[in-house]
Figure 1 (cartoon, rainbow, N blue to C red):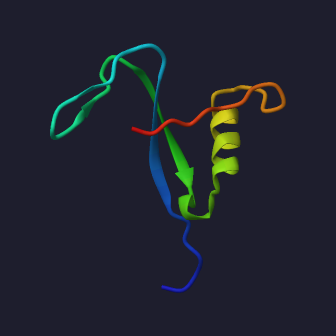
Figure 2 (cartoon, rainbow, N blue to C red):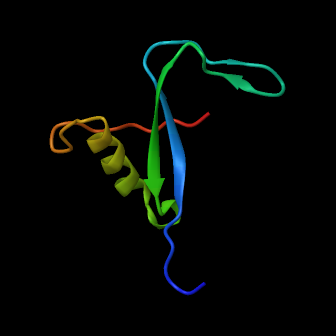
Length: 72
C-alpha cells in the first residue's frame, strides 16, 4: 500500500510519590499514579521535543516549567 503511515505508540507516564519495587523479573510501579498518552511518530521525536510534548500534555507552561525524564 502506497502512502505515508504514521506510527502511534502508547506512552505511559508514572508520577508522584511512591516506591519503586523490583524483583529479578520485573519492576512494580503500582504505588504511583499514571497517565496513558499516545505518541505519534516516536522515531522522529528527539529528547527536547519529547520533554515539550510531556510538558504540554500535563497542561504545564513550557516557558515556566521543565520536565525531568528518569528511566529505570
